[in-house]
Image (tube, rainbow over all chains, first blue to last red; front, side, top):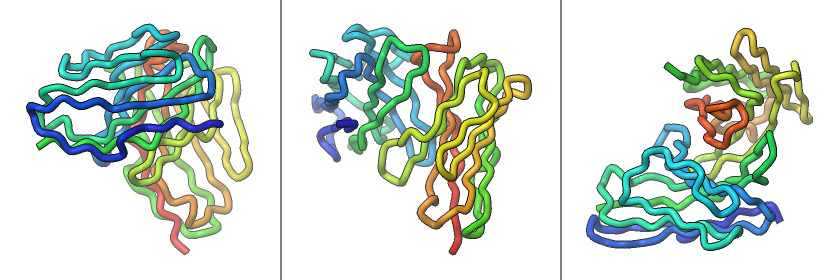
Length: 114
Length: 114
């Protein structure tokens, strides 16, 4: 199974809402990533979890809060977002602990903030 | 400053021809470089990885070269088909060269015309 799943596929939320994005993989990977992608732009790294610990936070605003409950699951909690946060949010995983990491991406959650 | 550039935002070629895409980087020292394909509204899909000590890598109709002196990777698709139409992204590990803080190039949108 080389699949990374993400739920929901689409999400519309107001600026005062709290919502969560979910990501799951069953490849035994120990590194998981959140990316943000705006239209016609490349993915931009937000967070990296390595062996269930947050290893990289690319200066992401605190209204985005990642969580890694176990090695297969990754969440992104959203609170008080702004319209400019509307984007495709991609989750990825990689083996972890190797010197050449290949990432497997999920299909993404398309988020619209009103 | 650090920068990744891909030769053009869009590239149109005739079916059956070879497509050549370029990825140039500045002020990075990656130990390897990757190429991904992304279709509209979907997550990137890994295609090829090439290490700094490898000159060339092939997979079916795909070929990648890596010149660390020129700080450039070339990605070739031979005998191109309309199904190859997609955005192609290069990616490299920023930081120490083996890190997980991946940076993507802006992408080249390839259109193969029948």
